[in-house]
Length: 120
Image 1 (spheres, rainbow, N blue to C red):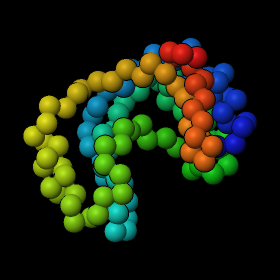
Image 2: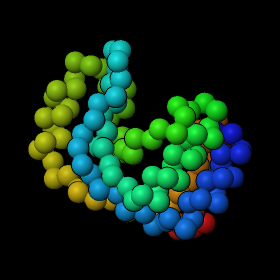
Image 3: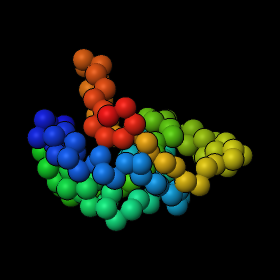
Image 4: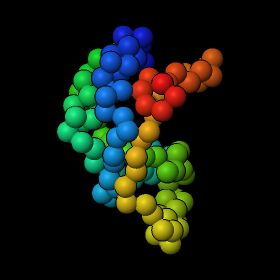
């Protein structure tokens, strides 16, 4: 994300943290040989509005669309997805989550910039 989006996130997110998310289902993202499995989450109206604004500001994003989710399987080969889902069904899965920190991770310099919540 560019610096304008990160700066706006630093304005929008701190009052919303801690934030509650509720797991409402499982989704599978991807259309080629690799799939990502995630828990579909619901967020507060305020968090959803903030996320949509940030997404719209992001020149590399998809406009003001946001699908709140928690990735639990990344870039999985398509043929292992059914077994992965079956294994998840055997686990006790949490129903809700509390985000206590909002942060921006820059992988190249490996810098975590906390922008709201705990340790901000």
